[in-house]
Image (cartoon, rainbow, N blue to C red):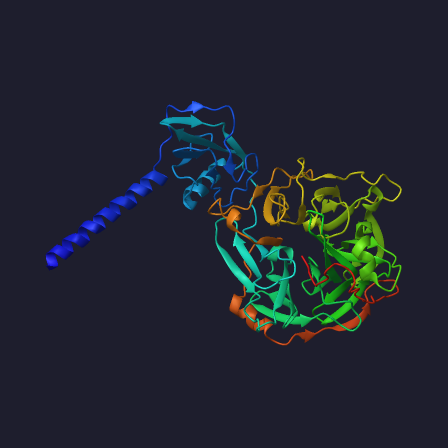
Length: 543
């Protein structure tokens, strides 16, 4: 009996090995059809990255051919004939082979030919082409992955993705410390200088709330809310040369739901100011806190001498600003301003207008200065500042240091993308300034995805490509949104367990220390009176 069982096991093993070899030959050892008939159009593929400029160190761009057929062959190749041929649909490219192919295509072009077999006959579609830049992209991107459920913030994660492959890790998960009905909201993982020195931060709200400051393998939780400030820090910006200084906006933000607008929701600042946090002293200072201005989204110039931000002018008409802005939110038009900063005295100069968006009936948000200091990249929409929900939002660029007072508002300002790339919002630069990652809902209007575009020295973004996934079907099966993408040159050092322990600790209370302006301005607070008769919902949200 034993020899019979042994022979059966041996035969089964041999058959399994033969099956695996056959599958390997089918997927990796496919050949290009020699008798294919040319088709005078490009094949429909998912994702459509044709024409997008690629980094030489990006993850494989697997595609799914959407043409009907009995068999498929996808050939990736360079001018010298270096190639990868896949006989599966979707394609499944070896990482090692892909890296070798991109190294050959660097500074030139990657070509993709698609063959489809129907009724025994092969068709060859027009070649897809991707320029491959010589400039590499930063190895990592962090982002928040959330359910766009508007009022439920359970099960949020901050994640880190290696863009040269498909490795992803969870930096922090808000379910780690949830207690029954008591939960947390997390947002905004922001590094200093693309994490070159290992400094970054993120926020935890509600249960065990605080701002977590990461210094390489160490982390500390602080509470930036004081009796003299509007809120804890919301949107942060690390000083590029001093890892102890961080500018924040402090916001009281709510969301109003539409009943007829396809954009579903409007996120409104009912009050917002700017503060400076000095981690060495654990002190908070006012920067901009005008009573008739909503200041938000600060960002530094790379030399640390200027702080840019956006602000909307609004004069409150009653004691109930919530009721006012529930209907008057289209009137909020944010302009771009900046203040000079003296690193020695840690004082800011007077406010300067950089771009008057309101003068052309538009509203600017999320300004970002390129690492070479030459370009200001920002989102521009019809109104408001939460452009992730605005289908009118587009990315624009302008040279830095250009004021608009006494000039035409659009002088030296141009669309950063030549094509009509709608619903583009939060964006950030790579460390070399040649790549921009931004979020967009352009695919379906509901779920935010990340796109990456080459940013040339003329302030122009080339056609973007979708952040690659191992399976092209990934996004169609993902009912979550990407949020606040930021480039990193090195990974976040503390583990998930390490950061969970820090969040579980009591936050270090910051102290209010007055104004950081060379000429202090009048401070103000916001009186909050919710109008229960309004058919809207207001809750705490953030990018």
